[in-house]
Image 1 (cartoon, rainbow, N blue to C red):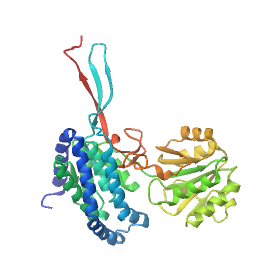
Image 2: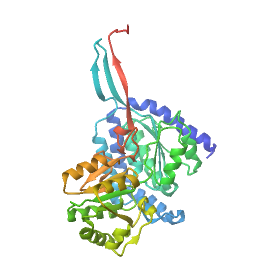
Image 3: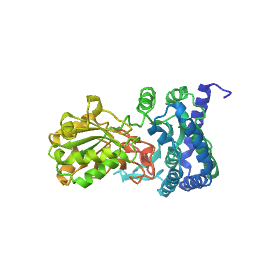
Image 4: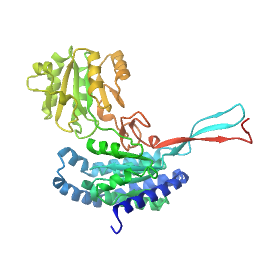
Length: 420
């Protein structure tokens, strides 16, 4: 780099800002051409992408990546196929920019429209997750934003390969030149430099470990869309169907352990515990899960390890789960709201009234009834993909897709009216 780090970061941000002012005029057809071009290029260059990803995987041990994070780093034909599907799904959505959210005509004849517009410049920071590179770029471009992508050093080769493909597709579609940029330095100070640029960057979205997200939230001079952690719970009610409870619990915990919507805590009603907890524990033990339980649960399943207070707060990202027997439905809700990170909780019950009460009283971004916590995902919710999951209540909550990366402005039409 022939210029200083601060000069480099400023140049990237200024070019992104300039491109963002041109993006609202980009047509839906251009955006879709970009998305389809990207999908075709990823398909044609998948062998090269996989070879670059292997370089990152070979270096993973030197970065001290645990198994869960190495799994996130991995690209294979299945995950590349999922990227391509997501790009086509996003292309199929209507262009959100310029759509009228609502409209009214006032008594004096002026027409007041609420019109959807892009946020501006999105600074997206993520760690060892190269599969989200095309997802993030696709969502930002489709919603009319410019995006600065800052991936982790662990995925350097994978991200560069994908970013080059994205740039080729953007150029071919006639997008503004700097609408999509990858930060090409792994210097950690670059993040701090960008986080100060609230006059150029509209919003920052971090996606990674809790320490990264807390750093971003503490340092950012602009709004941050985020969640810190995902201590997700499955509550098995006294009226739970045993087969559903086992299937949903095992999937919630074991289908992919290193992700934010994997279940970390089991809460079970006292009335169901004597008959059902041994079965659930056996199913989890068969998957290699270590259970850390309250005193009452350890009496029922003696193979459990006694839980410390910290265990009920923890996002394990691995083969460990806490277990709590609740004396009542109210205690279960209280326990979950106390220890939850507000991400995803599930209830297993055959009683519709219990289900409704649970969804009303649990304060999380997604509440599942008789289904897996793993479904809290933009693709699974029909958003095509997501740029992240927010546990905040302003400006977006839950999986953030195209609409969550827009805001609105008022456009008023008249024919000469003046205010008296």
